[in-house]
Amino acid sequence: QVQLVESGGDSVQAGGSLTLSCAVSGYTFSTYSMGWFRQAPGKEREVVACITSDHFTASAASVKGRFTISQDNAKNTVYLQMNSLKSEDTAMYYCAADPVGSCTDFSYWGQGTQVTVSS
Image (cartoon, rainbow, N blue to C red; front, side, top):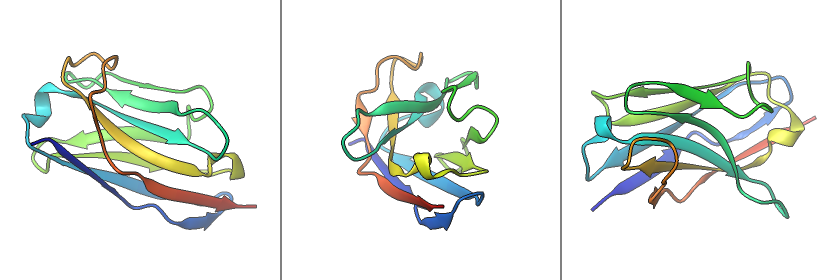
C-alpha cells in the first residue's frame, strides 16, 4: 500500500524559510517521480516542483530560485526547501508520486501540510 506523509508545514513571516518533508512507503521510491503541489483557498491546485527518477528537477516560475526539491533515496523521503517565502506562498502543500517516472502521471497523494506566510 502506497503511503505519502507530509510534514514541516508551519506559520512563518515573509522572507523566512521552511523545509517540507514527504516520507513515502509501499513502493520502490527511487523509480518514481515525486512532485510537490499546492492549493490556496479558492484557487486551483498547482504544481510547485517535480523531481524525476533520474533526478531531473523542474519548478514553477513563481518559485524558481526560491524553492528546491530534492530526495533522499536512503530515507525514502522527498523534500521541498522553501526560502524567501512570500504571502502568496500560503497554501496547503501536497506531495505526490508518479509511478511512470516522468512527472506527468501522479497517482498517489499525501494528505497535505499547511504553510502560512504572514507579511
